[in-house]
Length: 618
Image (cartoon, rainbow, N blue to C red; front, side):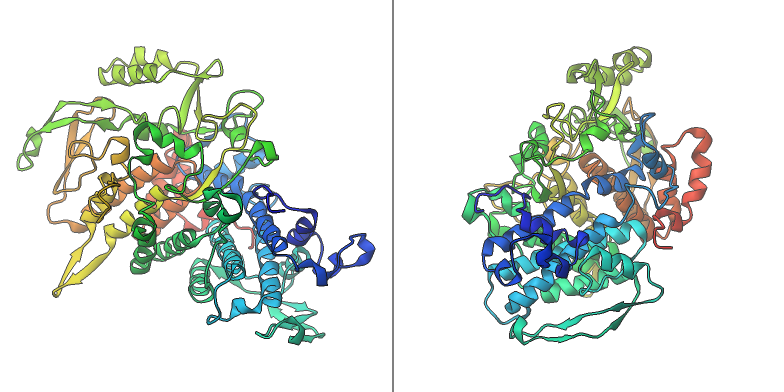
């Protein structure tokens, strides 16, 4: 069992972990023809490890759901004529309870399995409850399970708006379903109180107890689980590298960096910028670990796409591992790829493609902000993001092959010369496809890894924090906005190791210097998307809030280029709209992807925040 593959689970583990199919009592029933008993089940450390892997097996089943609900409801993804009825429902914000992509069942499976494993560790390894006891691998497993459960609740509440709180004593799907469908209270027939002196001395009450059904909204989920992670986790993440000599195991399971990312994201969502910055800086300033999450040359320029080829601890924080050879696959390639036998049900929106095709490298502007109407673009630079965009995040396919990069660049150059007719011929009749989960993959692989958290995403979250966070120095309140700009452009805000120079999110793909980095000033120029000529400007002199909003929009655009189709886009739009107390921010952006005749209808529909959620529990 020491050489088992990632997420591969032995028969015993499957039966214990996927407890949605039977209760613990039924599992131990000898009439089920299972030749194992409870007293022998947890004698071996590797049985605990196998159960741990079972949890990740359930989490990996949520990948398609996270992507579909996080992207198809946002502005970067749309349906094709091949989309199935459930995808059409999601796209149209008309989601039924029968929708297979919106069902909370797998979230409940993960919560149920986590509850069960947490109780097993409390029973069999009671030292996990003692903050003074030495840290062992059981404490690290306990931390993983607590993180897994918190992540499940946090993602579920962002989708559904509210979620039923599942008591730890409910450890099977039957119990959970009965609890959810109960009217107000639920009778739990057996209640166990765990003591630090072990399972044998615990008291079992063989009498019914009432569990009050209650729903947690986003604020309650964040308050409850940030408190639990900060006060109940002694350690997180078993070091499997000692057994298998594979460093990527560290970021294929919950680990300290992943836990801090989850905490930081919850605090950012809540608006607690101090705690969000504290947790994100545990990643961005990980000096004790060789600054592993610096945005340096490791994935600069053409190497950026390697983020989606292999797992690397310099970028990946928590990644779901898949492998065709082990029959561990996902449906993302099938959803997006237009090559047979894939279904090509989803495609990039025009807005998404424009994010990559209308960014300009090394352009030169000459003028004077005191006379902004005289300012002109004297050298338009080079169009297109060919490191993060074309050929990796999206592609044009003709005859089942991507159009060459050079031809796509020529298309953009022709547009810059305003020869739109000739430029359109280059991609005429091509399929525009999401390529992030097909890049460097065989047609039948369907096993692209899925990054839940990675370094660039955390840096951009931290930039978002710095946009609004201020600090007091010598009685003067000072903003951190310059740090936000530097994180995105070149990383110069960090104190860094001279051997690993920070490059910034844009900088590592060539768009972070003085000419083409994001800029926020009194005068902010508006450029034509295809010619890069200056078309106008906005004057924000004396308007600090206006500058913050403008910078926030630049960061959101950068998140679109860097993190498209990784499942967070709709959550990003909700977070910004709520911070601004302005639902029109989200409504305008999302409605823009609909046909002209539907935009006003969808805009008005999305002005109601209640329509941003899947109403499964109403």
